[in-house]
Figure: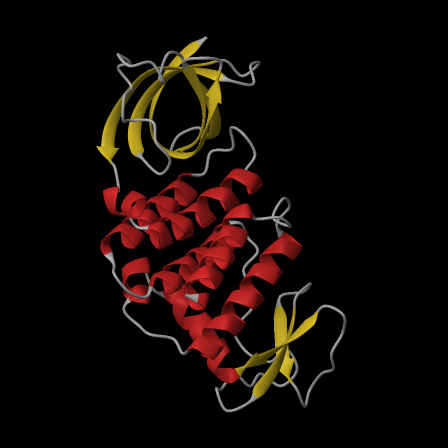
Length: 258
């Protein structure tokens, strides 16, 4: 049994017995880990206030590759993101990347690039007051790049055209697009405007806080969200059901009906 220390972000927590928690964490050095925090729900626990979702912490844990759950020995707070927990809309948005990673990553798969992408996403959501959906869109594109699944946005697969002056057909299963004049629709195709194509290219190149600084028209934003989520669900195992996304849609519907 090895003792390990690593930065970690809490993706999810659930109760275990009367006083403990089972935590799903994305760690920088050891990938996704399921960790038991013994006695962490008791009043006098040394972990009090540390083990909440989204918290960025340094942990020491006992790691045994033959066990499903590891044992948490120590946790020290690095970053807490209080605004995320205070604002319901930010809380709902922050849950989306955490759930995507939780459902798609295999336990123990070291992926420091993904750890830092999630950390940057949470920091941007904490700090920014507008453009929050752009932060999530940016996360989607960088997540696909890290996973080796990024779509080819260079130009029409037939003629090479890539301007905003045309309408395109994006093929979900192959991740390429073509001008409407160059191709035809299949069961895996969706329409994509030239403006949406330009937004995809831009979001793929910028960091989270830069993405939040630009306002994208509602119609283009809706097309972006639908394309990205549909593409991810087709290519990334485990994402057919995203409870965080369903909750966000319900929240938006309630707010629009007020």
